[in-house]
Image 1 (cartoon, rainbow, N blue to C red):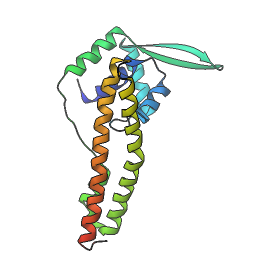
Image 2: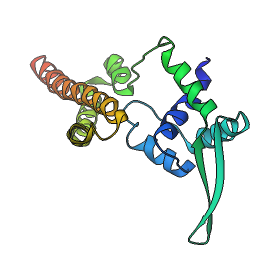
Image 3: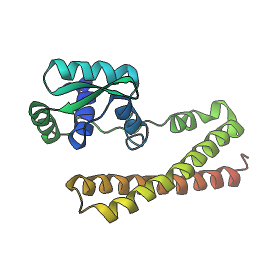
Image 4: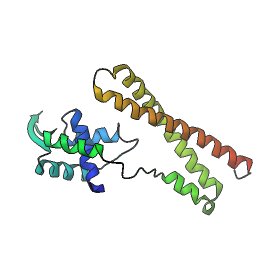
Length: 183
């Protein structure tokens, strides 16, 4: 399956748990999945339309508060496609952090600019870590209610470990720069 089809699988995966609107899919990506995957409305809706055309998702219209609302539901064909993709070997895992890219080339702007990036990164991680920890705790309590909760919890646990390591790293980098007299 080509790289561009991963968005198909992300949406199918979300719909495998519950039917949703495009807006709800975007909201889920901006919250639950934002720690490791993202998408824009500009990629979500064309993907949904393609999944409907391919018979992997059905779309039904309802009215809520006088407004039309399109709700998407995964089909059996969509579930089979998702399961097939889930069994394939991982094509690539990548970590892309602009903070690290700018740190790598930090000699061009000096320690002041570099430290600003590190501090901003640390602040962001400190704000997001409690959300991950809370999700992991909540999922721990409800993991027996739905088979999917175990896997959500395991993913959240990974996020907690990574973010804890990011905080530790941020502190170490700051200390190293201080010791070298760079800040």
